Image 1 (cartoon, rainbow, N blue to C red):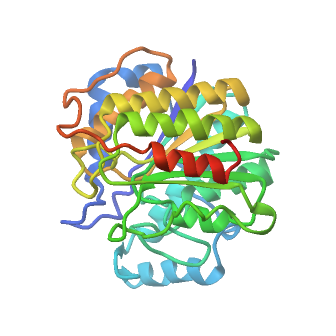
Image 2: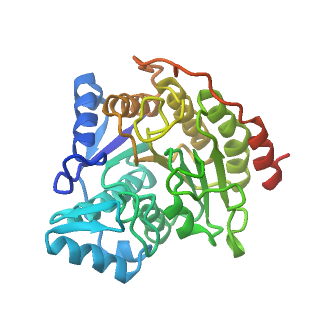
Length: 343
């Protein structure tokens, strides 16, 4: 297998004390280099998205706001998302690098790819900035694939612990993009969207699939969602390409959530997605990094991901299973399957 990796660490976009900082990517790169796995992959040079690339997804006002605040030295946007003087360029490089990773797979120069990029993107909608996200990297990459690379049908699977509300909003009325979000849901947890009934509108009705899992869901629950919901609905949709918003903040050690996934559980999800891509779209799959705020978990998670893309059997999990029993999600799965006509 040929796996391409692209790093866009966004060092110029970082803020001390904030959970989403440049040290996240530094840790990931250190894990990969020390493992020796970098000798087995192709490293791509980062690329900067054009404003035309951004404008396929985002409003001119949103693009101009990020530019304006960055040019003036940075500041907060929307209450939870910081910017620095270098943020506009960092965000364009993250989005452009996502597009380059997709291009490497669609062109056939790589079998699969990983875009290790920041700032993250899945909370940014067509006209709003929130959740540490400026521009929606995965949505920009999807539109790039459709408009520039001839791809028609794209599936996006988001297993970040937070609902991918921005990605959902962008494609909510679109039947050319099937969007899955498997996330923690409770009345107090950000962003508060991603309910079961949010399943698309107009021609996009039924193409958004939310699995709003309760706190305490772990390996068995997540794997059941993939086996009983993601796999059959992907098979119905028959995508030409699969993109993944890969967040490692559903691990039981992560400080920002209360889920029970282990590193082995994450590896099992990754292996399933790679298998689905092999069965449905000639293996064409690209993983884009989103969240993950326990740095050691993040490093091991990405390392296990690359082992899986290379068809290795290695799964590294020094932390083991969650210390608490996971909750039962069978009732929720029945409701999801009924809504999407799988029951």
